[in-house]
Image (cartoon, rainbow, N blue to C red):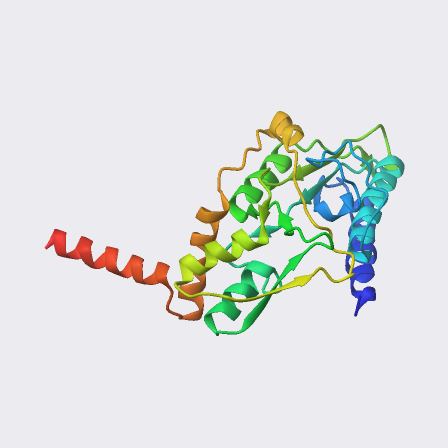
Length: 263
């Protein structure tokens, strides 16, 4: 809401720049690109399926990602580019984005700062289909391995080309309050929680992925639950930022026990 042009510049203009280069290449590349689960917007059917409507975006970000899917259709239709869009569901893990809730919750809990835990206007907890990065990477590789060649050359289409879109999620929505509880346990520190109503910024109260299409086409099957994934994240966070956490202490103690037994 504060910088809408950044989304337009990256998700629309930036995507078109990529497609313009790709359409004229010889041979044309097949492209796998990042869409988003946000395209489901106000859809209230769960779990979210690729067959559900995506014409009711709840935010400008979602609208630009939906625009990307329509732009992909256009370049596929006109120029024969093979395009696969991946609708990611709340990806988290080591080397993640510091603006994501799990990341700045970790930072603020360790620093003793309060965190805002959103609830819906009806008083229900916000829930997300948190998807661990390793599972998402497997989905990306699977979609690349099954991508067919583009069918154009020098900006001219020879025959119809592959056009796909897939959900890549964990299939298990978790309330944000549960996320905080897991982090408290892993960090060994209680959070200073402020329960507040969701801001009217276009965010949605829940996400839930149906990944049956990705499983059918390239065997996508997420295997990391939120507790296991956050443990791996906190282990990385502790090492990268040099902070003490319960996970770090457990690892150090386990290492000392192994050294003692080997001696």
